Image (cartoon, rainbow, N blue to C red):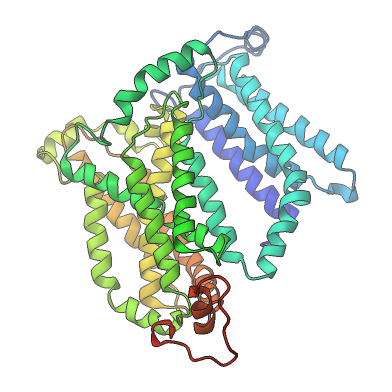
Length: 469
């Protein structure tokens, strides 16, 4: 496990706090909109904030505010661990909670100077709860989770850890924005809508190419889930592992039925199960293989693969549908607020903004993967990956500006560059973990695992050619 020092947590916490301050104060309908207030008037308004009754449609935003402060609570508690030579967990927890509450109140007070930001007890409460949850996660992780992860790593299950984290993240992503039904009326309304939603097709109303991309994305997103199932119980048959995957996807799909803002699709079970099957087959294929020898083979196809993927990313950005508008018209209609970093994410819900950020990062991270496969273990290419992803994303955003009905987001190229650079840096470790997984299965292991239960194998028995690397 990567061990982070208190200073690391401090830097991460400060960076995250600055990001919250920027999103809370600098972003607005017209960007930064400062309105001068007398301190006494501001204090009077702040003390007068009240709880406001919200309908169910406001619940996703409330939950997003709660989740927003979970990382800050965690980082603050971790940064204060043992500060000043102390070793009192209760004191550390109390200090972290005080720091987070003061931060929340300070940001909410500052928002009075930048209308039309809404300051209510609803969101103060949500953020304090989120920070408290983050603080509580620190001892839970260190006592109950980290030792188990370290033990798994020491016995060679590093790949299982990463794939398990991805699987958990994907399940949470499917359930965004977590606005579950909380009343009989909401449940009844939701159940009334289910038949139509289950029979719907993802991307209805969009071009066929876009709908095809949604299918590909659904399949690709669950391939690592299949890999995780394969590594979590290596001796189970492919059929049993696939059955576990189907059960998992049915459970997740069933949970989305109770998420008001989510749209369950029955056909998604087919696509996601296909992705799990591909992941299982891939892990079956690498058993006993020398992946280092196959690296050169893969690298030869990467230039063509990058070009094909560039076309895929271009299609995903919506540039293969509809007509074009003249450059002069596009410049005349360009909203200068779109040049403000993250401003397009302000005008949508926090759940939509989170989805957009994650989806764009995931869309361009494979650029870094492919550059690394092309260049190999001993090369530097994070900068090349970042520049390539930035250029491709920037070209796509410019193209979106020339498309009727599409809106460019000039923050996306930065996200693309960071994602591709991080992916390149992560690939050596990831590749080694796959190599380790492959070598866990010798040809004899594969042959023995393929035999019916109870079969006896003589020592030194010949291994059939089909099981040789």
